[in-house]
Length: 335
Image 1 (cartoon, rainbow, N blue to C red):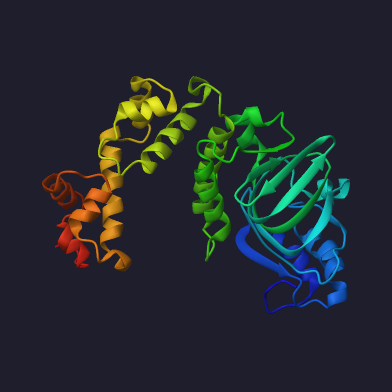
Image 2: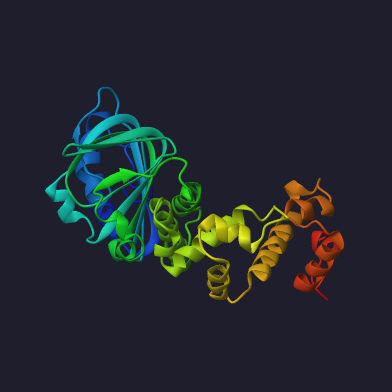
């Protein structure tokens, strides 16, 4: 039943269609054992509106499953978990109930999922990121999976190279795959859930990262400017601790010229150097007020975030926050 005070199934089945960003949780735990699989198939899968297919075969033993669904604006977000494996199929009925023009991305958190569409098969294990669109398919699932459905126009504009692939998965070690995982976890694990504006920003960034990850092998010069910028920012965030981080290093990593790099950073309203400095200072400010990092002295924090000149760090920190790093750590407020 839906995890709330009400127990009426008809109310629950319609509730997830709301656009206000609420999380609706459905579980078989409170359902009589003999009715669990049919409840999951007839009630929960109808409520999910095409997030996943219709279960076709009940597993032996006790069936147990749970799903959390959130619809926020044009984005569909879900986490599904099943302790017992089961088979399901995406039928014409499921396709009719699915919100149109969406492209699904799946992060397998544990267990596994395999799907077959025609002669093409895809298998996801823990940590794998899969994607699919449109046509009917058959699948098996067990474990826990995070699902984000993005509007198809976003994919058409930023990752057109995905559109001719009905299903597949990202290579585990492909560039930006880890960033995709982190974004999907943030979207699906938020407690409390993110607001609509936060969800929109994070989903927008997720789309860019998926486009970059799926574009492995495509020359960077073919990427849209916003994707080039996303690639630059992702690389810089990952290497803020490196005191030798340079514009040339970032440009070489993405595969663009130094002039193009400076042009992309102008889109942020900051130069490369200013962006790096602000983000390093922000990282230090969070670390200095984190009670779990109190054992580290200020110099250790500064070095860890890429500063190799403590005098410069202190001067820059004071200019940014109007107090010294020590005063900031003590929880003081600017005078």
